[in-house]
Amino acid sequence: MSLKIYVGMSGGVDSSLTAALLKESGYDVVGVYMKNWTKDLPGFNCPWQEDFNDAKRVAVQLDIPFKVYDLEKDYRQKVVDYLLEGYKSGLTPNPDIMCNQEIKFKLFLDLAMAEGADKIATGHYARIINKTNNYRLKTGIDLNKDQSYFLYRMSNVALEKSLMPIGEYLKPNVRKLATERKLFTANKKDSQGICFVGKVGIKDFLTAELGVQPIGQIIDDKNQVIGEHDGALYYTIGQRHGLNIGGGLPYYVTGKDMIKNVVYVTRNIQDPMLWSKNINLTNMHWLNKSIKTLSSKDRVMARVRYRAPFVSVESLKQISDDKWQLELSEEVKAIAVGQSVVFYQDDYVLGGGIII
Image (cartoon, rainbow, N blue to C red; front, side):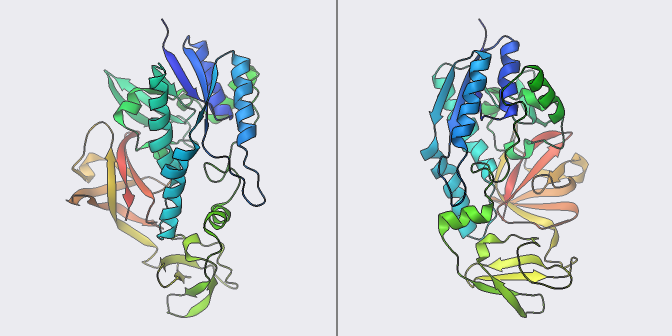
């Protein structure tokens, strides 16, 4: 009797091919569309209905059962509210990481298991490697598309119960394989922007949800007021666009004070406020085994945000119940509070934590 696999089908080419490959491999495949967000925003219609229709068309093509899980209430509470509260506090949270932790690899997994699934599958560009029942998360073959950074908070149960076949392919090959199979989504463009509202930028989304923000001062590294901002929560460390300060070299955001409603900037790209190799972390999550300390001899690499270059870890140590101190081998630019640092060893994900 073949294993029953519930495939999260988003209406995109990656999850469509995931379902097709698993069916061809002999699995009993069920397609599931997760209805996470349906709200329209000013000037933009949420694409959920189109995505739902595309996912259903592919399920019909593949002749597999198709279900809808309405997760909108949970998604609002666990992902959207997390995002909004983070920005209101001056952080730069990552909703994709929280979505994977709370929705795809927890709620979706639990619902699928309760219905008799043996495993779930997604179209992520990452690999799950099983070595004698020790399941480990590894980067995808396509390093330009690798999504392992967003998956570091998966539980070990989720690792054991999940499949990610697309992680074995380069994106052009995914398109080619989908085209060969005449999948309806073979040439559909990848979604951009925030994970749940498509093409809408984060500033437009925050304004729609939180309202127009109070105007405040922009102050440079000489403590001079050089302009006004339209809401401190919109800005993140290292940002150089959207400041609307004309003339000469660009300015970079070096900090912000949410209470005073001030954004601090500099034109000096070498400003020490922009660079650091010492980072404090909290809310650590380790895959496979807990790690108490790391040193340079462990040959561990860190990534301080999605697609950031890998940097060698000099040391990592726990200094209190929920605070860790990380030292990198070199300074990195634009460390943003609320983002995640993820640790890798030989392309395997060890875990990570959130910058404080």
